[in-house]
Image 1 (cartoon, rainbow, N blue to C red):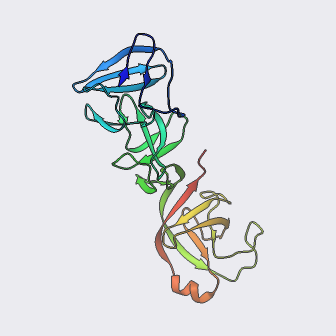
Image 2: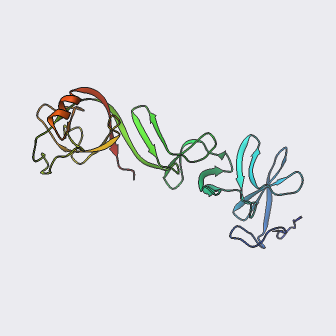
Image 3: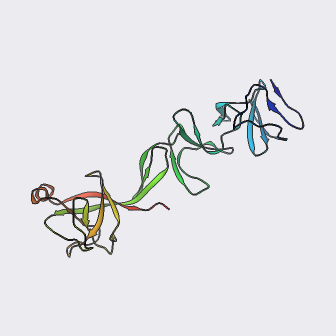
Length: 232
């Protein structure tokens, strides 16, 4: 049973948890729908169903999906972590659960799948590529190019004074500054720009290989490269 009054309410079927509200002042009904009523109590939203129970778990309201905490009936608002798998979701009262690429109020960017769950993903929009971690949070982005790439070996020191290794690329530093990380899908590896060459112009790159045999095998080919940017 749920007791409502002009002063306060408590959930009679709950034990004390971090989500429980005791003795808070009720506010006006913020909105009525075909299947129930929205309440705002303090800073939190609740939804009362036609049978008088407060919604818990996943509920579809006016075509939008919402999640309400089982312990208190509060709407999960903003970025929340739910379930035994620790799934990340983002909900607002106006829009329900968010899907796709979403920029949060704190400036973080997330990707939510069709079910509204944060997921690991690589998404390309135009020539920009976005990389999201297992929780859906953006951790890397970059600009994609088709590069005319070749390979070299045998050098003992790069233009930046470092020992070359597989993972080193030579670039045009006017286009790709030294120290830039470059993801090359062909190798599924992140390389570092720390060398240059007189014939390397624009987005051309030269990939350091450990042997001349590997250089001949790679030859020269057009491949995709992604010039990565730091996420601030």
